[in-house]
Image 1 (tube, rainbow, N blue to C red):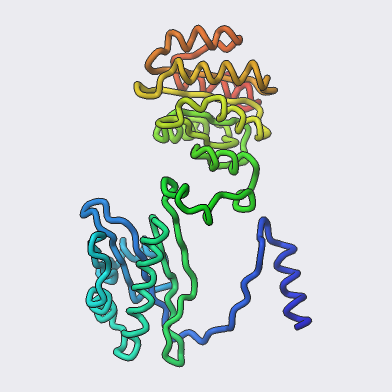
Image 2 (cartoon, rainbow, N blue to C red):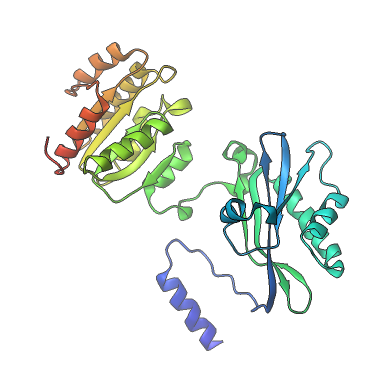
Length: 310
């Protein structure tokens, strides 16, 4: 017990945001398998995938040895059928004495998938022990964000995130990724954000974070600015380009945020899209000169951050 306590304390001392420690019996492993369930957008069914080569990256297996992956499609209106699961297990080469327990595990996995409205449930590895048992060695469950309001047991908490900015963005449904650079990115649209990210790096700058407030979040410019202010950034680069995401609405949020929050960093903005003339007038009212060219905006932001000069 003393050794276990000592080892546990050592693990906690190195961990970040870890609320507990799961201690399991050491297992003698004979073989590792893989099984998962996800949605198949082509057929509108649930797709169960299984592979006798567990413990590996399933994407690499799919790329290099796709014949190793066995699949079944499950009609969501009928649910999973035991004969489907047994057939899948036989296709994987599972021994007869494990078919019964394997069927139960995979049927239970499907019920977890459906009950919790998951995007993905995965067991990797599904272990065959030396004494002839099947056991889930590790698992993963990804819940559909749009269904979270029906599952209060899965509500977001601060403990799951590295910092306050990530947590606040997650609560608002705003895509956010933290980096270690100097320039904060606040862009409308995932494709545009990725492009601006690449441009900053290509021109010699460094990105502090990736925040995408396009699509359904385009009216959350003020909230996005509040999240940005939780970062230690040298300059904020705002880029929009679109038709559905109205530039004037985003600019109103930016102006409101600037007046209320008074951000301590300079802001570079390239605002394009529906209502951009009004957007430019709004930005000029708070001493932000809007740019038209995205690359020009990137170069200016890098110069203000102390990077490559204009």
